[in-house]
Length: 118
Length: 107
Image 1 (cartoon, one colour):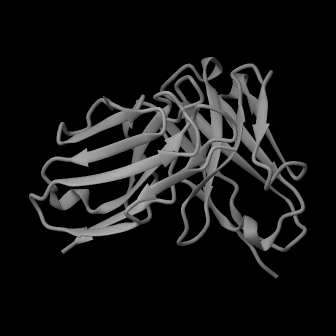
Image 2 (tube, helix red, strand yellow; image 1 turned 90 degrees about the vertical axis):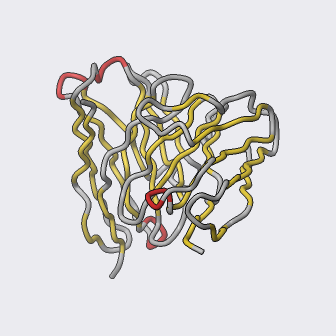
Image 3 (cartoon, chains in turn brown, blue; image 1 turned 45 degrees about the vertical axis):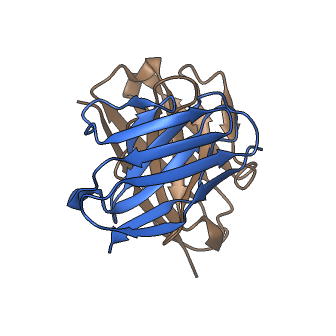
């Protein structure tokens, strides 16, 4: 069974940093590209970033480019999102999602809440 | 960037109703589109991939159609567990973009 479990969310002050993790199991993690998607409270879904299986290709939404860094450790079956210079508008539930191919998403984790507030 | 629009933004329907949701892309995306269902406090769940293929385990009352710029999600007979918000996602090119969502609630 495919499982994705996010962690690392919490309350952080504007300008602060946070590192999210996503632990994957139930599939060959190293064979799949992965995504981060977020959802602000009461709002729709927003794609944040994608990383290819070998980390060769990385993409970011303009809203986070230069502040967020996606990475992965295939030996640990883990996906990461380093978030720096956080702003109030980054407040959201952050989901990791598997890419089954062609930049799609199929399985999603349960999400981790990031709140940016003073 | 490819913009996605959805209509309607919300609808009220009764159990047993046929429901159709439309998603339009600002440029052609072939069939690189998925449909997702999200219930409050839960992660999105994929229902349809490649515009018209049913995700394994999803009831057959859900169907998708379309190609290019116009897509539809149809629920043939709405069930109580189908009251949720539905999103489309284009994955033809980065940045990936979601439609704004359609909330389906009880009439």
